[in-house]
Length: 334
Ligand code: BGC
Image (cartoon, rainbow, N blue to C red):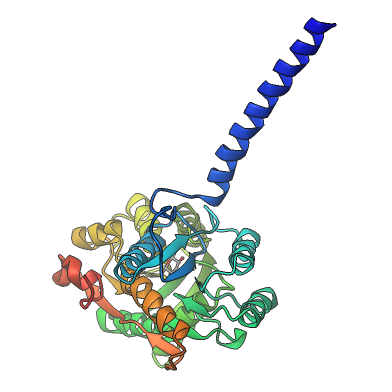
């Protein structure tokens, strides 16, 4: 009996150790803490902000994070970068809810055109936690400020670039991150409006990439199968141009298709350098991250400001390369 009881104690102890280990391990995985996000025991911070992107490991969002981290370090802010590892709306909204429940001093997040998002912004405001939208605005939600590109204007610039860079009839296909995302819709609308006056431009298709490169490749494939006479592509999110370029190189290498993409991730710049992508619309994700943290500090101090804080945007070509790192940081920040 005594042996049996000892045996039971030992088993219970081992189970206790194992559950402790699993809780720590999976807790860490779930909340994606890393050395940079852990608050240090002895350091005290002036504010605690959370930056929530639609996808943590997206190269574009990593640049936003970098800008936000540099500003946070400079202004003594404890910044957490939390969200879904891969784009997932439910997990995204849940992360915002958790941040509000954690009574942080500010939530910086991408705007979503959804009643659920609006409710979260209202909840946040009730707890006196300001919400700054970044990259994508949600003006109806009651957010305090938007920091990011004027997405309609950037789409308009893309349309104007296509008009300037091409001659004769063009059959244009659009690959967009998400058909329902407000900033993607604005980029498409701006583009359509810019080319609307020209009869020679026909938009033959619009397909979704789900903001992944593989999604963009699949979309470009489908388009070329259904519309083999496509002469130009417009990709409206950071990985779309890259996905389109890969497909065009594989199946239409002999035809000189025109591609205009979005953002300046290294692969896009490489494709511009080799001539597969003609042009890309520049955004300043680092600058967005940096400025969002600074605006959030100002909001915490009760300062009033214009709710639209647009960062720069422009179209660049091969002759604009290489781009200096400081210009990628918006030119004005370290
Ligand atoms: C958009 C982001 C998006 C990213 C996807 C960018 O152009 O501004 O909202 O998450 O592309 O790679």
